[in-house]
Image (cartoon, rainbow, N blue to C red; front, side, top):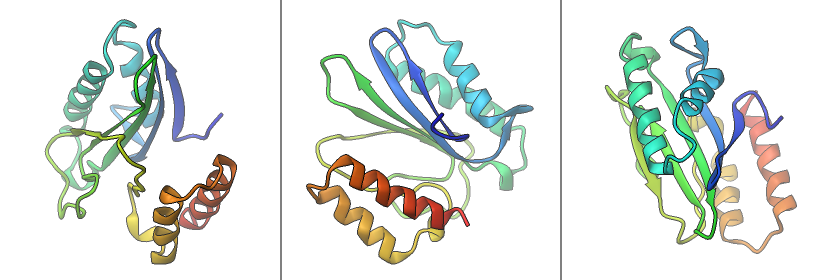
Length: 164
């Protein structure tokens, strides 16, 4: 298992590594289980963008039932499709990829597709848990020729410190 806030979804033409940050429960479900339930309710033949839109719509409905200060949720889907470039989707009520943090949560979950034309480093959730030095390291790693195991080791160390 990748962890309690990560899991993999596999469909006939695509698969996604799904992760999230924010609230622990949605609609009485653990957030991980709720996301998996919504994803399992979409037809296997659905295009990724349709699934992302469905997830954002379902999440918006659930979040509106919560007090505004509890509506923080960001879902990230790293998608691989047969014979297509990898894609990254972010669905969030408080993170805007590549933009400064929002002052307040949104009334809805917004969906973003991040271009895969170049490497990027993103921090979602409690951004201040990642030091300036570690942010610089992440940016440098995204531009380096470091092998995947070296990148995973660096990410593991940064996540370990941020999780304290």
